[in-house]
Amino acid sequence: MTNIALGDGWELRPWRSSDVQALVKYANNRNIWRNLRDGFPYPYTLDDARTFTERVAVESPVTSFAIASASEPVGGISVQRQGDVARRSAEIGYWLGEPFWGQGIATKATLAIVEYAFARFDLVRLHAGVFEWNPASARVLEKAGFTLESRERKSVTKDGQTVDALVYALIRDEGHEDR
Image (cartoon, rainbow, N blue to C red; front, side, top):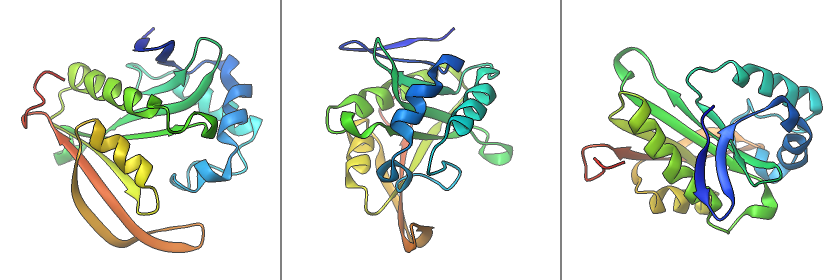
């Protein structure tokens, strides 16, 4: 089992089947859904939570983590390795329950997943996409050392709006060898 301490009682840990109630509690939120890809449903049901936890339970090595306090998971973060000619790249994605926004937890989780990904996998580049209306998520990535690489104009449609996507990247050999 892979647990990664974040400090202040927070950790990244593998998802468990016992997490389904807390997962629904925090994931069933329109404000979270609005900032994620359409594969993340809203409303978020118990069936969605069961399907997700069953799918990620078989991951080896672990690539999807719960962002958890001592009592329950309150969000998630993952690293998705790319294939073919992009095999040394991976995309990270994360979400955090709304009551925990603005406390630095997402930044700690992102810093930890960066360290984990570069140590565990043969990666050179990590990237993440942010919808233009989510400056808080862009700030999380900037605090974790990511650089704005591109603005993909009118490239995503979410919640009835077509907006820009901001692509942030972190390259291992650009001053991040220790990660």
